[in-house]
Length: 197
Image 1 (cartoon, rainbow, N blue to C red):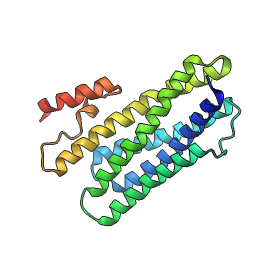
Image 2 (tube, rainbow, N blue to C red):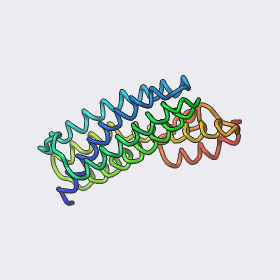
Image 3 (cartoon, one colour):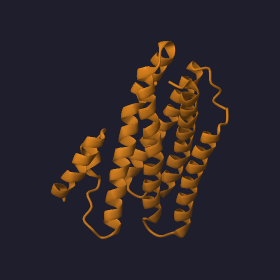
Image 4 (cartoon, one colour):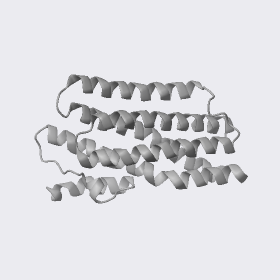
């Protein structure tokens, strides 16, 4: 395994989590649905915890969490762009528009976050010694929460869009009702939504 690339992954993972705090904080200003607001508040609290978990993980690798890398700058730019998109939608004043943009922004942010944790899990399988233990422990603590963040918010985004189109929506989405934490579960929930109307 290439340690310099693993280190870069950890820098990007930290920046993704830091950006996630900003994305969720802004999304909570956009949300209108009470159930979704409660969910995103929980995800914000979990994301704060994930920042600390990645910081501790970096400490186990002897990495400086303040170090800038080119990839980290790109991740930060993406997060800032998502926040700016939500702020633009808020300024439009159109009912429901900011909530939709917020849901889509979270799906985009959580897609990168989910990928980071998948890669950390794969790296944990190949690492050795104390580094392997640190990677495995962090991955075990965070992975299911990240799965939920991505799959549940994707369901919310889809159903909010359907509702905005005047089509039959299932709110809260089936991913929520079925407590989905896997891609297979998300696919099954989406297929089952037809019976939930």
